[in-house]
Amino acid sequence: MREVRVRFAPSPTGALHIGGVRTALYNFLLARQLKGTMILRIEDTDQNRYVPGAEEYILQSLAWVGIKIDEGVGVGGPYAPYRQSERKPIYMQYAQQLIDSGNAYYAFDTEDELEVMRERLKTAGVALPQYNSITRMQMRNSLTLLEEEVKQLLEAKTPYVVRLKVPRKEEVRLNDMIRGWVMVHSSQIDDKVLMKSDGMPTYHLANVVDDYLMKISHVIRGEEWLPSAPLHVLLYKYLGWEKEMPQFAHLPLLLKPTGDGKLSKRDADQMGFPIFPIDWIDPNTKEKAIGFREAGYLPEALINFLAFLGWNPGTQQEIFSLDELINAFSVERIGKAGTKFDIHKAQWFNQQYLRAKSDEALAEYLLDSLSKENISCTKEKAAKIASIMRERITFPKDLWEHGKFFFHAPTTFDENVASKRWNDDAVKVLNAYKIELPTLATFDAPTAKATLEKVTSELGIGTGKILQALRLSITGAGAGPDLMMVMEIIGKDEVMKRIEYALKTLNVKVA
Image (cartoon, rainbow, N blue to C red; front, top):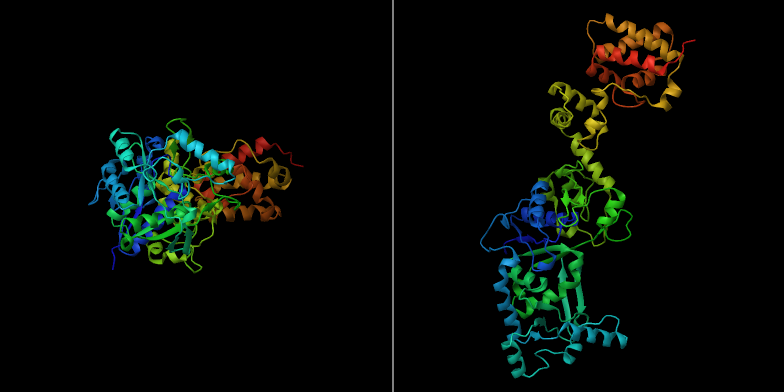
């Protein structure tokens, strides 16, 4: 059986899109499930689009989400180097092999000549002008020039590109693991450039050569590469590597949350959610794009969310650890149709993973926020706060953002709640409760509740009628976590101070 070797091969042209992380994840899951090797290759043949810092960003992003690279950039391995720009000398020999076998040719056309060709075809009513099996015979290349002319042009170092000679009438077939048989007539494929005039290969040649030399067994990549797949099939055929051709799987598109069109950074910016795994600062514009990490998403939650963007396990289970994903994953259960990027589902996953953590683990998030605010707090108190706040948080920062009242007494009060609930009965109860509290030897949630019920019973006022007013005095809001536990955590003295302040500030006259 063929050894399973998969690769994630991004281009360092900017931040790693979340769709790229999903592609890396699916490759990683397949490699781990089949005891294979996960390879990272940097495809930087287009030096004009190279962005400084992008490669380091890719490595940091993969490390953060937990996708471990077994071989490649940052790790090394038997097929180094793993940056295509460092493999430049390798590619020309294969381009020459294609030329020698009659499956590729030199093209000496200038940019002006190419533009004249395109305009001529447009005038003739051709919707998509291409350099192909028909038009190449009117162009300046080694198929139309005499052998001696070609030799002279090469010796004179005249700029040229190497193009694939695509057959005019041939059915190109590919059995995709997700889509089944894909068939394209060669008349729909143009004579793609394989080697550029600067001596660098294009994606098409470098990709195929490297996959062959690195013994890649499966290529899992985005749907946007599906139109190029027939071209790659031809390259495997013409280079004599058909038996070594990897199995292909083209992933469905990630769609906008509305489902109408491909997800873009603009969509994410407009809708207010991240589209990159970690923060990215554009080196040219200095514009900062917030990442999932900095927005408060846990890597394990993001991985779980991404796994379900196109794949499903065929069961009702939604929460999967990484090991469970590895065991359950199969390419055959990836759908063909595009999948909506539902950020609310991502938030739901984050909630589930946060709520599964221990009070002590959540307390560390709160303590981290408190240290930035120069607020001291014991681990025990932080754990208590985490315990009653866990069902109300989506992100770690929410422990502080939604729990500031534990550390700061309210100075303002919800006006809507005050107008409805702060009345004579509330003032009577709170005054009596404030007087009763100093008599208590111990103060915890059960005692706080029992004392309140005693006071309301003596006054003949229903406890439920004044609970929101009491909460308002303690937290400034009309809703929140268990009120008695809140009072236990902040302590008897602080409860008394807050009730006193609320009674003075809200200034309700007792009849």
